View 1: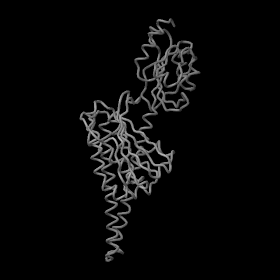
View 2: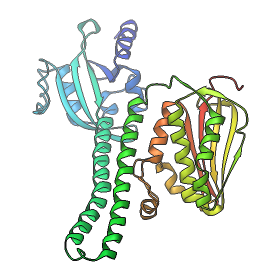
View 3: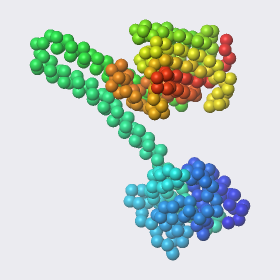
Length: 369
């Protein structure tokens, strides 16, 4: 293929959002798009196709499209719609750049202006499959979280109707437990609704403005009774004055209430929870200045192995302790989505026995007053 035609073909492929390769009549790769190079982790230019994608059925499909008279056609996939004449569509589990993924591959003849050859389009289904698995896991987790208290309540109701019908002490004890389980289900449903709302709005940037120091002072004051009950002191640093940044006030209150509440639940043994607000002259991930609000405790800390998963829905370090303290396992997931909506970042630092630091970094967007 002439260089000019090869450049035109490469430009044609770059306009396609999925991975695409083009091969000549010798089954050698003559062009690829950005998505294909990203998928394979290499530039496959001028390489034999069989060395780029080692899948026998896909190679067979390419051979047949290049020369249908000499090569055997692949067996049609009964699940996929029948492709146009001269085109092959198939499902394949491929390997590329050190990972395996499910895909749908379409092999079609090159447009005649580019000469004899074939295009290979690869639609990666792994993201959709992972999303479906997340959905299944989420439904299973919600079902489990709701079934446990419901089972307990059903058992108590049966007992109250039977053996404990006339036992006043047992009745009062069971009713207290049932009230606690009902409150736990209510918290779970509320958090599920909150998570759903946050996810629905995540792609819309907040249109309002928030005085961040004032908001943090208000949250600290609101959490003071909980701190006193936990025999813990809330200390603040850098919350003087006024600073207006883009944000949704209600959601940011939810973020910091959740983080401070967690610090009081799991870090109050250190006797101190500190809220620190600082300016960052340049935050690389935000590509500009920002403000960091850190919630720090001196409690028992978190083992390194748990840190990457803390913001997963329903992930708990200590399931029994979390439930006993009223946790739903959704709080940090909600925090993560709210911070994402604000185009911010969250950092979690902790060492076993040395406490934890949860830092929310938000874009500045305006000057401090």
